[in-house]
Length: 392
Image 1 (tube, helix red, strand yellow):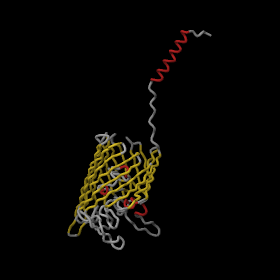
Image 2 (cartoon, one colour):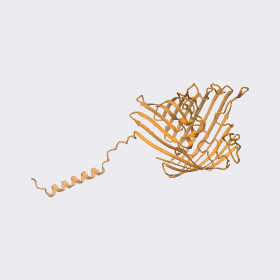
Image 3 (cartoon, one colour):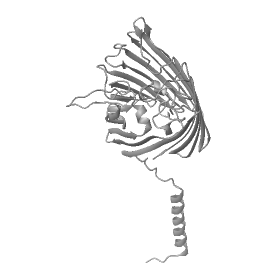
Image 4 (cartoon, helix red, strand yellow):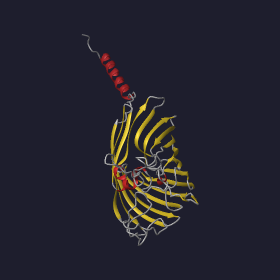
């Protein structure tokens, strides 16, 4: 055995030092990005207290959709959902219970059954927010086809936590909430996606007429801008409606721009026409939003919107309104959002509603809502709402 000399020991120490230094300074191997979980469970709850400054005796904040109870603590919605995306099989199931679903399904057709076939209506479907399944085909960039009960995409979502304000704009109610049918989505490029669909109808799990509705939507997302334009068309009135087989055309579009990490703006426009037996019913609507992130846990949002509707009228009669029983509605909204964690939000909101006729309630309201309908008696409505939403 060779004797270890001082020279050999020095060379050995130098080699060990070089190995240690190079190993410490060489870049680590890049770890592959983790693949998204093939199955995900999520849920959320929404609750609020609202004070209507008009103090209506019937306790109703009218024509507002989901936040419609004065001087009451309201459990708005409790939602549990599951999403899956594995081996090109995709789908989602979202169940709900609470105050919101009953408003959500107000327009669902109520169809009679027999002793051998069930009836269909809002009470049957209101616990399902959406339920669909589909497959991603290996065609080009990937063609995804889904079928079932699906939400209508738009700048405002069903979940409060995904919106800037607590309440939804009037334009939210100038769109269908949901529809039942099938759609196919195909990415045309990294920025553009085209989605085509065929449906039973506007807010119809089960159709109330013999015709089907169709939709086409282009979505754009690049950098600080997201946008979409949509067409939805079909016969949306019941088979025995006085307006006849009226084919309704809806056009909708929005642009969301975030020039900085703290400030975002959104513009939304909506309009359409329905030729019917009495002439042509038309509507047009617009909304502007702005949001400022003051701190990582505090943000401010404002919104203004208006919707105008013209009901067709002739010597034969007048068409029933598509949306509201007045020529126009508008609102101005300001919201303070405190979110100590990403999935928890406390919101304080002031909103002013105006209408081109008596659409709201205030003071002593005529009617009892059972044997005689409530009679609207105000053209304006002011509310303060304190809400909380949290989930996982």
